[in-house]
Amino acid sequence: MTCSCPGFPDEPTESVCPVCLATIPAVRRAIGDAVHLVKTCPTHGTFSVPVWRGLASRVRWGAGARTFAQPPVCATPVSKGCPHDCGLCPDHRQQSCCVLLEVTSRCDLACPVCFASAGRHGRDASLAEIDRSLDTLLEATGGRVHVQLSGGEPTVRDDLPEIVRRVHARGFEFVQLNTNGIRLARDPAYVEALAAAGLDCVFLQFDGVTDAVHRALRGARLAALKEHAVASCGNAGIGVVLVPTVVPGVNDGEIGAIVDFAVAHLPEVRAVHFQPIAYFGRCPEPSADARITLPEIVERLVAYGAGTIRFDDFRPGSVENPYCSFSGRFRVDASGRLRAERDAPAACCGVSVEPVAKAAKSACCGSSTPSPDVARARRYVAGQWRAAPSPSVDTPAAGLDAFDAILAARSHTLSLSGMAFQDAWTLDLDRVRQCHIHVVAPDTRLVPFCAFNLTAIDGRSLYRDQAAAPAPAPAEA
Image (cartoon, rainbow, N blue to C red; front, side, top):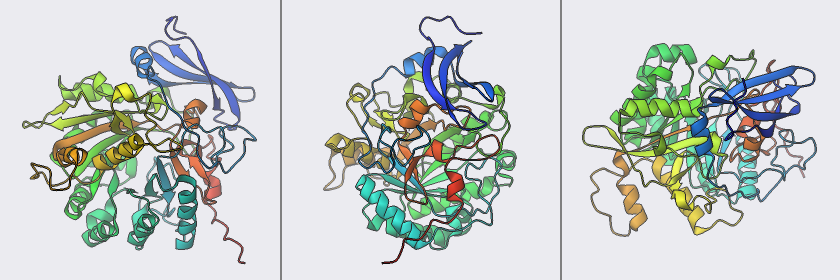
């Protein structure tokens, strides 16, 4: 039944039909103690899916102001309407912060929950194609974004260190690697080569601490390999962010154990970044029980803390739509328990960046004319996810300013964050228009992550289908 709570009337928005992907009207509606996205396609009927469980937290969570900044380069005009004009189009409300560059569609696993539908027989982007993408990205952003190398599984490429060097050579200051970690665990020399090339951070697929979880979600026994991968990165001086895909009934019971693993592997592990399962690819309509929402993950973290963690220790992102993410920063005390840094800044890209009182003024990664505060925000993101300085550093070294001294003290600091990606049932176009995590399409357009991976029930996509074919080579002069 529809909630009669006067504090949460229906909120109009737009979405897509999960069957035909047509843009249709939608509302966010309180049903019981949850907020559902409800929409009706004139051809395929009505769909209702929970997107937030907990009305009280929902109202509080969206109370802060947002600052938006249109991308400086809009490569496509508004024609069919969101999400069909991505490129980015002039209706997009936020600039890029983190941009994914898919360097291969090959993978050494066949994960049932893969958003990229990667397989063992895909193709690698050529170095010339990668160069064109990086050059276009540099022109569109001025190099003021983080670049995440993704796929497929990027480490199937022997030349990945060379790709890292090419990213840095164009002036991009922070390079991440999205990986399952298998090669990092088995090939320490490869990890050292990545570190020598300038790799800053590994986004490590990490769904749990038991092989039962890995077999359910990834089809293989991976627990020991994940631990070896963390150790290899630590030895090479590369920061690690653990990235669990959270699936109800599969690994939501291991959330606390994942945090325990992170604490036990400080300072190599810099953060845990939880991602509720989103249903991409050929998929029947998921049941409500098959979904977990961001506040439910926060509640599990609160329960794990047993008194040392509060719901209010987590905050929404300061630039993306507030219902896309949460973040909190914690210090590990002498007993191994997490203690919140309750004066910590608000979040951007899953990391704290600005005092909450200043969140309305902060543009973080979205300012047409980056200010000193924006530059400082990006330093915070990089500072949390890069490998921590030696914990033996007790005093600032010569030449370090006060800010760098704070970073030097972070060997016992852990970020806990989460991001809810959207599928065809949960897609809210208000959120898409505010997205600052983008993918470089093969034709070098920038597409919001959720739009790029969006698929209909039959597996048909708006953008990824186009990515399956090699990008056309430019005409020779």
